[in-house]
Length: 141
Image (cartoon, rainbow, N blue to C red; front, side, top):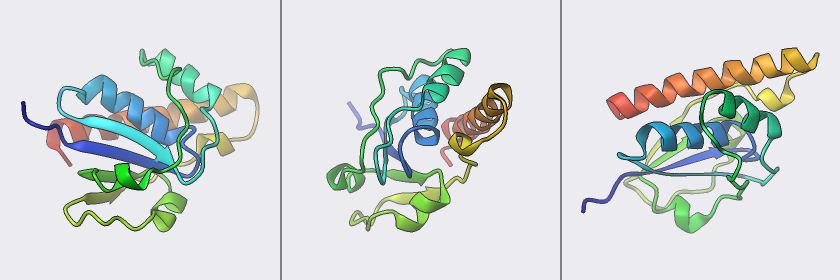
């Protein structure tokens, strides 16, 4: 059996954006890709991210918030950062065959306002990430 390309999504805290991307790629492309996510730090899984993903039919409630593992990082085929901080502070990747991309999305965890306004931000980011994942699964880029 041929090895599936491995995608490693990185964010600052591995609580929202990288978890959403991980969940969508598992749901939409697990037949094509192996996927994991991690952060520069582990901030815990954001309950609002879990809620908006459940609304989209994807259960990420069992995901864990993990710190970047250098061994995992260096066996990735794709390293995709989802926030500028992670892009700027990503550890050195020794694997010269890796494809590294930055897909920047606003941090919904920093949204302010009423609960309804905050959840609207989470849904907007979720939908943007889903569109980008769908393009990646379809086109491989």
